[in-house]
Length: 426
Image (tube, rainbow, N blue to C red; front, side, top):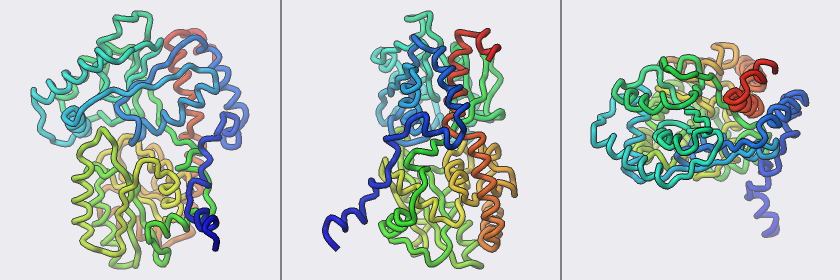
């Protein structure tokens, strides 16, 4: 084999198609009428600037969605932009606490933490130019930017909450609510995620992009290349969880479930994921996962660098069962990705996962480690049943959780802030 041929056999970039995706390419999934509808809605937003602000440009579902959505909005003629706040290690340690406490986890937090949050917020309030006609603020980290709305009174402000705040810590929620009530509207991912608020609340589920590197169809050769890259052999069933190394994703619980399954079925486990710049806790979790794995040669722990989308895609496609055993969850887009690939999925009945999985129809829901293990065993022992679940799952995602539907919902939301009568007549 020549050197050039050898390089081609190891270069995964040859399978990347995401840079060429155009809005008309989505017609194959959702039909021409949907894309035409997007053009109609976008035309009514001409002259308006949509400014998205969040806490990180890489890692996490928010950044992934914006990376894919912004270029498509531009193609539709919408002037959508994206800015990222600044923050140091202490700030992101505090916002991680806030994230955990919003999910009901008991992390200690006090006045000093809130002071750090406000000190960094003051810097961002001073340095970030809030120029948008529609200010779209994502999650708690940049929430205090609402203090700048007086500088452009004609602008509309939306707070987009991507996490489940159904049972938040009262002190943290009270702190955030002082900012939230100053917004024109709020957006949540599921009906049970929100709290009672004096401002309008919208339900908009997140989405995946079927043409992104994480979700495009891959030839078997690409899948085999990734397995070889990480020294994974397809000689026994593969169970996989793709997620950040985060306590709320319960990777140690996944290992415990795998060990219960392994008593009856010789299998292997892949725990693969990365870190986010606004999550300083992830490396500590990763070390605990390695300790729990205890040199088991059938547990593959993969710390994937940012941009490993083809690798994630291939690992999911190589899997016999995909698991997501979160203790708490936002929407759970890693679940959506696996469902789109037609994979049988076992996932905790938390957050937005039950919106995606109808138990025993489009996947299996679980509540405990033992329940997860039982479901995995059932799927591994019943391949035809597993295949049918996967087929049902893919269609459910096609109808409800693709990027085009997400864009439509956002366009309608933006228009509703300016053109109430137009929305009623659409």
